Image (cartoon, rainbow, N blue to C red):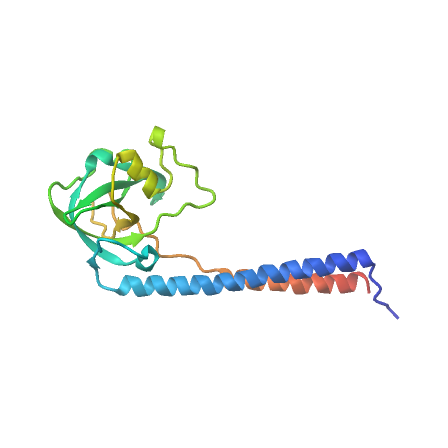
Amino acid sequence: MNKFRPPLAATVFSLLSFLILIGLGTWQVQRLHWKTALLATISANMEKPAVPLPEKLAKPKDWEYRRVTMTGHFLYDHEFLIKPRTRDGVVGYHMFTPFERLSGGMVLVNRGWISKELMPKAERPQGIIQIEGIIQLPRKSYWTPQNDPQKNDWYWPDVNAMAAAAGLKNVVPVIVTISEKKPDVYPAGGTVELNIPNNHLQYAIFWFSMAIISQIIFFFRFR
């Protein structure tokens, strides 16, 4: 008769592995709930009609992915190019331009994607205009390089640093991204990425499965 007599070290290692794998699966379940709620919020905000951007945003997070309108004019002397940004396989930039509102205050506007070759075709509407866009919060991922304001090298839209570099004051702590993409108009709007992947359920199943498999292997190894 086969007996199950695993060594103590192997038992401890197996138990620790099981707990770690269960922990990873549980973490992915938590991420699944967070991502599901986030996507629901984005969908609800995107369906709301555009409203004028308030003078002050007490809770910017509550306005993320809301459609807003603004009236004012662009300050083209202080354009920022966020790099690298790819569109249809072509590497380029997102062009950010300060927008001074008639009601006062500044907003950094992501006017859209443009490549170095298309830069001469960049349109710069003059005078007082009204624009519509989607509010986003500036974020830096772990892998994104640090900005170098002194060299005018920008890899993510750090609102405070960009405002300081341009000498702007009273800047709203959000980004407004032009929502409409017009044919043959550059910068090309519509750069908001809404197809946010939600693969956490598959990841959770993987880690829970690995936890079970690890115990099966442990059992047959020392049986």
